[in-house]
Length: 605
Image (tube, rainbow, N blue to C red; front, side, top):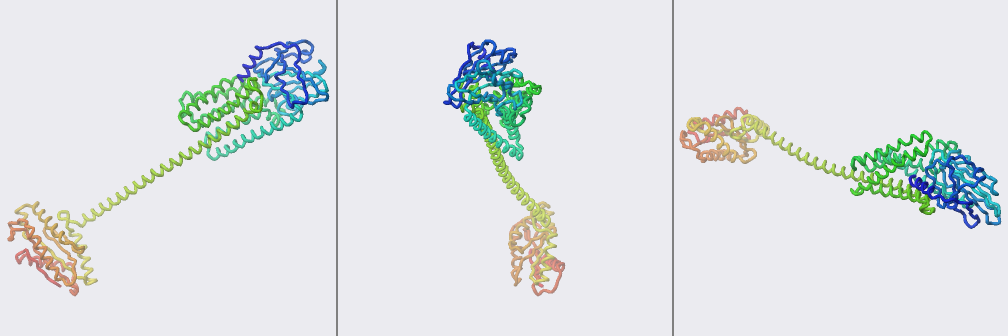
């Protein structure tokens, strides 16, 4: 729009008066003739002149010479004229194509023989669609030329609110025009079909993923489709041909929605609130929603004001978007690469389109259609960018899940090891508690409680299976005198040393050493038939205590000694209770004491 405005200013500044209508020779050699560079134009400042007024007097017509008639913002009514001369010897039928779907008021006049108005077509974007003699999206006119005949074509261009659209007049042969229309319809059908396919795919994708960037993309493509379909005249042709006012209101609204949805997509796709400085994100945000404000004039049927007001905000949005893309590309952002390539293709299409309109580039297949090509590529590339972003997020998620799983595995292993460690510690503590419950604290021998349980079990086993038992009680000689002489602490040491010596000698699993109380200990021996080995072993234990050489001046032997009472239960022993066996061993112990101590008294049953 800015380029169009500048072109309009340049146009009015370089006017050169023409004296007569430019003549274009028409023959059968060319399927199309570009008429715009041969036009003469006239500005009706008040917009009050009729064709009859122009024909009745000489007016200041100006040679145009540009490839497109771009009048831009202008309140004036403009007239264009060109003369067509049939240089063949037969009647020719041609189609005059205006090249614009959006000019508000577009009137065609065919003047024959200098002043006879033969055809008068009053049409344009502000009039119902059925006012067009040829029902196509672009107003066109069929002209018949007799052999050698010259006709003058006058075109009146007026605007509802000051914004003229670009006009590019082409004179077509009928077959070529039909082919052109069909090819154009096919190309646009493929174009809109591709956009619609991408739109529907991403709509389903959004429904399944609920990703905001995909939702913004769907809204942007939807707005772009609506705008393009209306801008190209197809909406007016197929959807609401009887509603020209609504058609003109919808176009700036769709354009504003397109800008707005584009801005939202940029912010969501590039995550500008997180990845960019606050001022740039706020600029994007402000320019995005600023476009919404400029649909207000369109609601009151002021088309041009909406577009004029949206230009600075739209330019700000585009510049901010480019800046955001460049900044993120420098940081290595993959989404920014897709965005910048797509945006560049669209911008290139827009520049080529407008350069062709203002005559800076020749009108050809590339310049006329690269806007559609660029926009289609932009939409597809952005779709690829979204897919790549989803794949990246999926890969990041998988990596995070693997990392979390690895961490969880390590934590589980550590937890399992800790549990095993704690379990082992608890088991060890439980075992220690169990051992403490059956162990004498001072001597580390089994205590009297454990003796009672073990001795009763051994006696029961003897009763059931008639297994031999060897049980003895030992008592340290003159121990009370030792305590009185050396003190109780020294006495405790003697008890510990005697217990340690005995336990070190009892190496078989069935040999068990108990502290029965005070200086009195008990021994259960694991024995087999014959029992004759039991007494020598007990004698060796007695010798072991004496051999320790623990000084005991109150003892006749000068050292610590012990007396033993040993009971041997054979397989054939009569039935006897554990209490009786214990009493017998105690009795034998006292006999050893009376026999001079430091000896073993034995009785076999």
